Structures are given as C-alpha cells and as structure tokens.
Length: 192
Image (tube, rainbow, N blue to C red):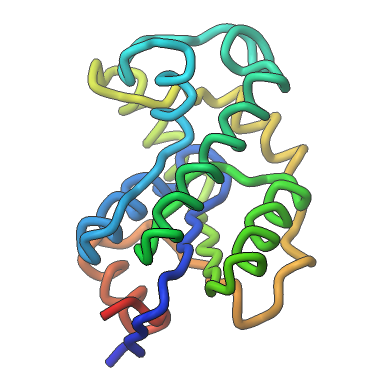
C-alpha cells in the first residue's frame, strides 16, 4: 500500500521523447485527480497554437529555440508553484534532460517545503521507433518528436547525478499502463 501524505508534492515525469512519459504522466495525474502540465501543450499555448498544431521546424528552430524552451520551462514551474501554493500536488511532464533544469525544480520544491519525485521513463530504441512511427500518423498527436530529435536528445542527456536515491524512480514503460500505475502506487507516496 502506498504511503499517503497531506503534503502536496511534485511528480516529475521525464526522459527522452517516445519513452511513454506523457502517457504515464497523464494517467498518474488522472489517477490522483491532480493537475498535469505537459511541456508540448504549454509550449504551444505560449505560442498561441492549438496543441495538435504541427510544428516540425528544425530541432532548435521556431518554438523550439533555446529562448522559447526557457519560456516553456519557466511556465511549467510557474504553474506548478501556483498549484502547490494552493496545497495541491502536481504532475510535470517534459524531457528535463539538463541537470540545471532538474535543479530548478528541486529548488522550487525546497523553497516551498514539498517533496519532489523524479520518474525517469525509458524503453528500448525499438519501442521508441515504433511509438514515433505511430505518432507521425496520428492527427491528434501533440508532440513534434521525430527519430532525429531523439538522437539529438540522447547526445544531450545528462544523467541524474544531482538526485538522491530516494528522489529517482526509473521505470521501463514498455509494459501495460495498468501495470505501470500499480508500480507507481507501490513505489511512490501520494496525497490523501
């Protein structure tokens, strides 16, 4: 049985594209009845676009420039802080490949005195390719991720050496969603 807590907390689902983090983050947020903020959705909101708008510019062009990415991650933190100040837990869902970005989330959690759980989602390259191929044909897809972007992300990935063992849960997402939620229930404390 998972530990219950009255204290709000941050659940940060992160990892490379096509690892299933958004699917799992959405399901976890629904399971707990808490807000979920996805970087792809927030990025397009900031640009005045519908979530399913196709924005397949270069990996660092258009709404994917470093400056726009900074705005997106700032907005994620702002939205999380607003919910946490209301006493609500929150799910954040983004790549968070850079240690400094993860440290910013840790700093927010420390400043507000809330727990922060980092759920690193991963799966095999074959599964990632299959998911990216399916996504490319889905008109409802929010993410603009493609294989070449995955390869660039893999080069930029910074291992989570800044996280304490109790803050990090690595999960293989190539399993049924119900099984993954059961694992999260078993591994993570959640608000009552």
